[in-house]
Length: 68
Image (cartoon, rainbow, N blue to C red; front, side, top):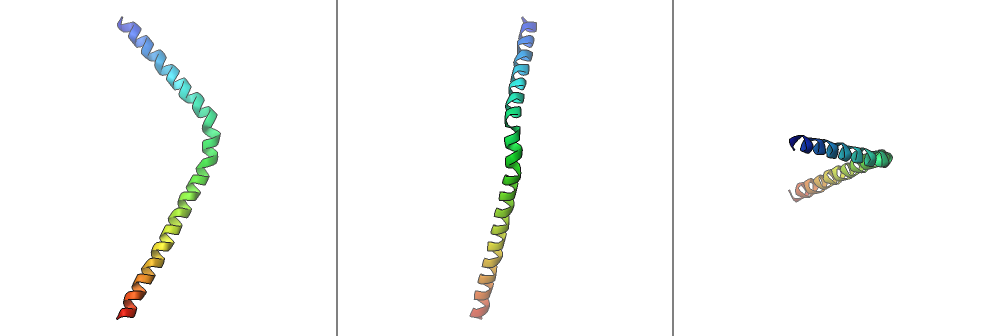
């Protein structure tokens, strides 16, 4: 009984691994094509946010300097 459970578990692992490999094979081109786009989008968003942050610091500092 114990051996049968082990064999069934191994077969399930092989089938699951095989299925995951098939899904990866079907989608890896899509993943590779989208990866640079996602990295570029994240880089652009970070750059825009940093630029806006610096812009607002200049505005706030200029406002306080003008008040003095």
